[in-house]
Image 1 (cartoon, rainbow, N blue to C red):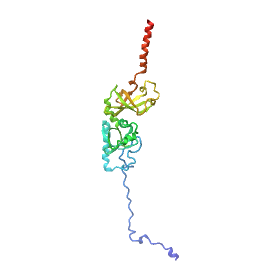
Image 2 (cartoon, helix red, strand yellow; image 1 turned 135 degrees about the horizontal axis):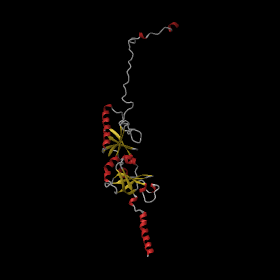
Image 3 (cartoon, helix red, strand yellow; image 1 turned 45 degrees about the vertical axis):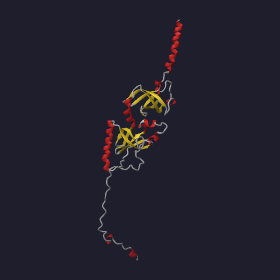
Image 4 (cartoon, rainbow, N blue to C red; image 1 turned 180 degrees about the vertical axis):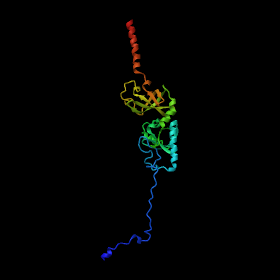
Length: 273
Protein backbone atom coordinates (compact mmCIF):
# COMPACT_ATOMS: atom_id res chain seq x y z
CA UNK A 1 0.00 0.00 0.00
CA UNK A 2 2.76 2.43 0.97
CA UNK A 3 4.77 1.46 -2.10
CA UNK A 4 1.83 2.10 -4.32
CA UNK A 5 1.39 5.57 -2.89
CA UNK A 6 5.03 6.36 -3.62
CA UNK A 7 4.78 5.27 -7.26
CA UNK A 8 5.53 8.17 -9.57
CA UNK A 9 2.60 9.60 -11.53
CA UNK A 10 2.24 9.25 -15.26
CA UNK A 11 4.44 11.47 -17.43
CA UNK A 12 3.02 14.22 -19.68
CA UNK A 13 3.93 12.08 -22.64
CA UNK A 14 1.19 9.69 -21.63
CA UNK A 15 -1.44 12.21 -22.67
CA UNK A 16 -2.01 12.24 -26.42
CA UNK A 17 -0.98 15.38 -28.27
CA UNK A 18 0.75 16.91 -25.30
CA UNK A 19 4.29 16.25 -26.41
CA UNK A 20 3.58 17.68 -29.87
CA UNK A 21 2.00 20.96 -28.56
CA UNK A 22 4.27 23.90 -29.33
CA UNK A 23 4.57 26.84 -26.95
CA UNK A 24 2.22 29.80 -27.52
CA UNK A 25 4.08 32.44 -29.54
CA UNK A 26 4.51 35.96 -27.98
CA UNK A 27 2.36 38.56 -29.75
CA UNK A 28 3.44 42.11 -28.93
CA UNK A 29 0.79 44.85 -28.55
CA UNK A 30 0.74 47.39 -31.36
CA UNK A 31 2.64 50.57 -30.63
CA UNK A 32 0.44 53.51 -29.60
CA UNK A 33 0.30 56.49 -31.88
CA UNK A 34 0.10 58.88 -28.94
CA UNK A 35 0.89 58.71 -25.26
CA UNK A 36 -2.50 60.22 -24.61
CA UNK A 37 -5.54 60.73 -26.85
CA UNK A 38 -5.74 64.01 -28.75
CA UNK A 39 -9.04 65.75 -28.21
CA UNK A 40 -10.92 67.74 -30.80
CA UNK A 41 -11.72 70.61 -28.47
CA UNK A 42 -9.28 73.43 -27.84
CA UNK A 43 -8.19 74.35 -24.35
CA UNK A 44 -10.46 76.87 -22.64
CA UNK A 45 -8.59 80.08 -21.81
CA UNK A 46 -8.49 80.90 -18.14
CA UNK A 47 -9.86 77.50 -17.02
CA UNK A 48 -6.88 75.22 -17.63
CA UNK A 49 -9.30 72.56 -18.93
CA UNK A 50 -10.31 71.46 -22.43
CA UNK A 51 -13.23 73.38 -23.82
CA UNK A 52 -15.08 70.10 -24.30
CA UNK A 53 -14.40 68.77 -20.79
CA UNK A 54 -17.41 66.99 -19.38
CA UNK A 55 -18.87 66.47 -22.87
CA UNK A 56 -19.31 62.82 -23.78
CA UNK A 57 -18.88 63.72 -27.45
CA UNK A 58 -15.20 64.64 -26.94
CA UNK A 59 -13.59 61.45 -28.28
CA UNK A 60 -10.07 60.56 -29.41
CA UNK A 61 -9.42 61.59 -32.97
CA UNK A 62 -9.65 59.16 -35.81
CA UNK A 63 -6.30 58.88 -37.51
CA UNK A 64 -7.99 59.31 -40.87
CA UNK A 65 -9.16 62.80 -39.88
CA UNK A 66 -5.79 64.07 -38.62
CA UNK A 67 -4.87 65.72 -41.95
CA UNK A 68 -8.07 67.79 -41.79
CA UNK A 69 -7.29 69.00 -38.27
CA UNK A 70 -3.74 69.88 -39.30
CA UNK A 71 -5.09 71.86 -42.25
CA UNK A 72 -7.53 73.74 -40.00
CA UNK A 73 -4.81 74.65 -37.50
CA UNK A 74 -2.80 76.04 -40.41
CA UNK A 75 -5.88 77.94 -41.58
CA UNK A 76 -6.32 79.45 -38.11
CA UNK A 77 -2.72 80.67 -38.09
CA UNK A 78 -3.21 82.24 -41.52
CA UNK A 79 -6.40 83.99 -40.36
CA UNK A 80 -4.54 85.44 -37.38
CA UNK A 81 -1.66 86.69 -39.52
CA UNK A 82 -4.07 88.29 -42.00
CA UNK A 83 -6.32 89.78 -39.30
CA UNK A 84 -9.41 88.33 -40.94
CA UNK A 85 -12.91 88.85 -39.53
CA UNK A 86 -15.36 85.97 -39.95
CA UNK A 87 -18.54 84.60 -38.39
CA UNK A 88 -18.52 81.46 -36.23
CA UNK A 89 -21.43 79.47 -34.75
CA UNK A 90 -21.72 79.34 -30.95
CA UNK A 91 -21.97 75.72 -29.77
CA UNK A 92 -22.33 76.23 -26.03
CA UNK A 93 -21.47 78.52 -23.13
CA UNK A 94 -19.72 77.99 -19.81
CA UNK A 95 -18.87 80.28 -16.90
CA UNK A 96 -15.77 81.57 -18.68
CA UNK A 97 -17.10 82.28 -22.17
CA UNK A 98 -18.32 80.72 -25.41
CA UNK A 99 -17.34 77.57 -27.30
CA UNK A 100 -17.39 78.18 -31.06
CA UNK A 101 -16.74 75.98 -34.08
CA UNK A 102 -13.96 76.74 -36.55
CA UNK A 103 -14.21 74.16 -39.37
CA UNK A 104 -13.33 70.83 -37.70
CA UNK A 105 -11.93 72.51 -34.57
CA UNK A 106 -13.50 74.06 -31.50
CA UNK A 107 -12.29 77.36 -30.07
CA UNK A 108 -12.97 79.58 -27.09
CA UNK A 109 -14.14 83.19 -26.75
CA UNK A 110 -13.45 84.36 -23.15
CA UNK A 111 -16.03 86.70 -21.60
CA UNK A 112 -13.58 89.65 -21.52
CA UNK A 113 -13.12 89.31 -25.30
CA UNK A 114 -16.84 89.52 -26.10
CA UNK A 115 -18.31 92.68 -27.59
CA UNK A 116 -19.89 94.99 -24.96
CA UNK A 117 -23.04 95.03 -27.10
CA UNK A 118 -24.31 91.84 -25.43
CA UNK A 119 -23.98 92.95 -21.80
CA UNK A 120 -25.25 96.48 -22.44
CA UNK A 121 -28.64 95.18 -23.55
CA UNK A 122 -29.36 94.50 -19.88
CA UNK A 123 -26.50 95.61 -17.58
CA UNK A 124 -28.20 94.07 -14.54
CA UNK A 125 -27.94 90.53 -15.91
CA UNK A 126 -24.82 88.46 -15.09
CA UNK A 127 -22.63 87.92 -18.13
CA UNK A 128 -23.06 84.14 -17.73
CA UNK A 129 -26.80 84.51 -18.35
CA UNK A 130 -26.15 86.76 -21.33
CA UNK A 131 -23.82 84.24 -22.99
CA UNK A 132 -26.37 81.44 -22.68
CA UNK A 133 -28.66 83.41 -24.98
CA UNK A 134 -25.92 83.40 -27.65
CA UNK A 135 -25.88 79.60 -28.01
CA UNK A 136 -27.15 78.72 -31.46
CA UNK A 137 -26.30 82.11 -32.93
CA UNK A 138 -23.20 83.28 -34.81
CA UNK A 139 -20.75 86.04 -33.82
CA UNK A 140 -18.09 87.94 -35.75
CA UNK A 141 -14.59 87.31 -34.41
CA UNK A 142 -10.87 87.50 -35.10
CA UNK A 143 -8.27 84.91 -34.10
CA UNK A 144 -6.54 86.04 -30.90
CA UNK A 145 -4.30 83.05 -30.15
CA UNK A 146 -3.30 79.83 -31.91
CA UNK A 147 -1.30 77.15 -30.09
CA UNK A 148 -1.61 73.76 -31.75
CA UNK A 149 0.70 71.99 -29.29
CA UNK A 150 -1.47 73.00 -26.33
CA UNK A 151 -4.68 72.64 -28.37
CA UNK A 152 -5.53 76.27 -27.61
CA UNK A 153 -7.55 78.27 -30.12
CA UNK A 154 -8.85 81.62 -28.81
CA UNK A 155 -11.06 84.10 -30.65
CA UNK A 156 -11.96 87.73 -29.87
CA UNK A 157 -15.23 89.42 -30.75
CA UNK A 158 -13.93 92.64 -29.20
CA UNK A 159 -11.00 92.76 -31.66
CA UNK A 160 -13.41 92.30 -34.56
CA UNK A 161 -15.54 95.19 -33.28
CA UNK A 162 -12.46 97.41 -32.99
CA UNK A 163 -11.44 96.67 -36.58
CA UNK A 164 -14.96 97.48 -37.79
CA UNK A 165 -15.87 100.57 -35.74
CA UNK A 166 -12.65 102.30 -34.62
CA UNK A 167 -12.39 104.18 -37.91
CA UNK A 168 -15.79 105.78 -37.24
CA UNK A 169 -14.76 107.70 -34.12
CA UNK A 170 -12.62 110.82 -33.79
CA UNK A 171 -11.35 113.11 -31.07
CA UNK A 172 -14.06 115.48 -29.91
CA UNK A 173 -16.95 113.07 -30.57
CA UNK A 174 -19.53 112.92 -27.80
CA UNK A 175 -21.20 109.61 -26.91
CA UNK A 176 -23.81 108.28 -24.57
CA UNK A 177 -22.29 105.43 -22.61
CA UNK A 178 -22.80 102.81 -19.94
CA UNK A 179 -20.24 102.34 -17.18
CA UNK A 180 -18.72 98.86 -17.16
CA UNK A 181 -15.88 97.90 -14.83
CA UNK A 182 -14.74 100.44 -12.23
CA UNK A 183 -11.19 100.43 -10.86
CA UNK A 184 -9.09 102.69 -8.65
CA UNK A 185 -7.47 104.27 -11.71
CA UNK A 186 -10.69 104.95 -13.63
CA UNK A 187 -13.79 103.46 -15.23
CA UNK A 188 -14.41 101.71 -18.53
CA UNK A 189 -17.36 103.09 -20.48
CA UNK A 190 -19.10 101.32 -23.38
CA UNK A 191 -19.95 103.68 -26.24
CA UNK A 192 -23.38 103.73 -27.89
CA UNK A 193 -23.26 104.01 -31.70
CA UNK A 194 -25.98 105.35 -34.01
CA UNK A 195 -27.33 101.81 -34.55
CA UNK A 196 -28.18 101.70 -30.83
CA UNK A 197 -25.54 99.10 -29.96
CA UNK A 198 -22.44 99.48 -27.80
CA UNK A 199 -19.55 98.39 -29.99
CA UNK A 200 -16.45 99.94 -28.38
CA UNK A 201 -15.14 100.63 -24.90
CA UNK A 202 -13.00 103.50 -23.64
CA UNK A 203 -11.37 104.48 -20.35
CA UNK A 204 -12.29 107.51 -18.24
CA UNK A 205 -9.15 108.09 -16.20
CA UNK A 206 -9.62 109.13 -12.58
CA UNK A 207 -8.36 112.61 -13.48
CA UNK A 208 -11.17 112.96 -16.07
CA UNK A 209 -14.07 111.86 -13.87
CA UNK A 210 -14.89 115.20 -12.25
CA UNK A 211 -13.54 118.69 -11.55
CA UNK A 212 -13.87 117.82 -7.88
CA UNK A 213 -11.11 115.93 -6.07
CA UNK A 214 -11.64 112.22 -6.79
CA UNK A 215 -10.01 109.87 -4.32
CA UNK A 216 -12.24 106.87 -5.06
CA UNK A 217 -13.82 106.50 -8.51
CA UNK A 218 -16.65 104.46 -7.00
CA UNK A 219 -17.78 107.55 -5.11
CA UNK A 220 -18.71 109.03 -8.51
CA UNK A 221 -19.36 106.11 -10.87
CA UNK A 222 -20.88 102.65 -10.53
CA UNK A 223 -21.32 99.74 -12.91
CA UNK A 224 -24.38 100.25 -15.10
CA UNK A 225 -24.52 104.06 -14.74
CA UNK A 226 -25.56 106.01 -17.85
CA UNK A 227 -23.05 108.78 -18.63
CA UNK A 228 -22.11 111.18 -21.42
CA UNK A 229 -18.46 111.25 -22.47
CA UNK A 230 -16.20 112.98 -24.97
CA UNK A 231 -13.34 111.31 -26.86
CA UNK A 232 -10.04 112.97 -25.89
CA UNK A 233 -7.53 110.55 -27.41
CA UNK A 234 -7.38 107.50 -29.70
CA UNK A 235 -4.44 105.08 -29.82
CA UNK A 236 -4.96 102.94 -32.92
CA UNK A 237 -1.79 100.93 -32.27
CA UNK A 238 -2.86 99.81 -28.78
CA UNK A 239 -6.61 99.82 -29.55
CA UNK A 240 -7.34 102.30 -26.76
CA UNK A 241 -9.82 105.16 -26.43
CA UNK A 242 -9.40 107.86 -23.76
CA UNK A 243 -12.62 109.50 -22.59
CA UNK A 244 -13.56 112.37 -20.32
CA UNK A 245 -16.67 113.23 -18.33
CA UNK A 246 -15.43 116.40 -16.67
CA UNK A 247 -14.58 118.13 -19.97
CA UNK A 248 -18.30 118.17 -20.76
CA UNK A 249 -18.91 120.06 -17.51
CA UNK A 250 -18.07 123.68 -16.84
CA UNK A 251 -14.95 124.25 -14.81
CA UNK A 252 -16.18 125.58 -11.44
CA UNK A 253 -12.98 127.64 -11.11
CA UNK A 254 -13.73 129.48 -14.35
CA UNK A 255 -17.29 130.02 -13.21
CA UNK A 256 -16.01 131.52 -9.98
CA UNK A 257 -13.55 133.73 -11.83
CA UNK A 258 -16.34 134.97 -14.10
CA UNK A 259 -18.11 136.21 -10.99
CA UNK A 260 -15.05 137.54 -9.20
CA UNK A 261 -13.33 139.41 -12.06
CA UNK A 262 -16.21 141.86 -12.65
CA UNK A 263 -16.23 142.67 -8.93
CA UNK A 264 -12.49 143.31 -8.96
CA UNK A 265 -12.83 145.54 -12.01
CA UNK A 266 -15.53 147.57 -10.30
CA UNK A 267 -13.37 147.91 -7.19
CA UNK A 268 -10.39 149.14 -9.25
CA UNK A 269 -12.57 151.70 -11.04
CA UNK A 270 -13.92 152.91 -7.71
CA UNK A 271 -10.45 153.32 -6.26
CA UNK A 272 -9.24 155.18 -9.34
CA UNK A 273 -12.15 157.63 -9.21
